[in-house]
Amino acid sequence: MKDERNIYICALLIGKRGINLSTKMRQSKLFGERELILLERRIDGDKKDPTGLWSRKVKPKVIEMVDEWMPRRKQLKKVVREIRASCENNTIGE
Image (tube, rainbow, N blue to C red):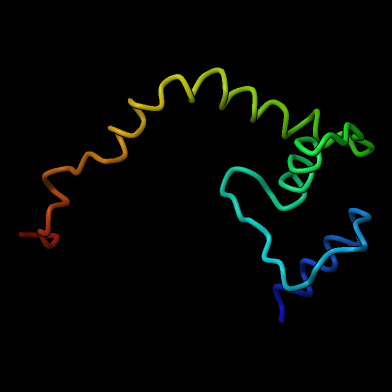
């Protein structure tokens, strides 16, 4: 119930009054809720940016991801998968 209330309040602030309250919003560690909404709107073709949030925060993040990090995707996956010897089922202090 609390999540649905937060989605409804966010939708009112953004101006999307026809939102389905049972829909769960996607969560991201890189983008905030309003940033995700702006990104989804931009993908759908809406180019409005009345608050400047798109140009200040979202666009630079997307550019960095696409230009810098996506070409290095294989390296990043390798770094994430690597398990240090100190983390392999050993308890601290052994």
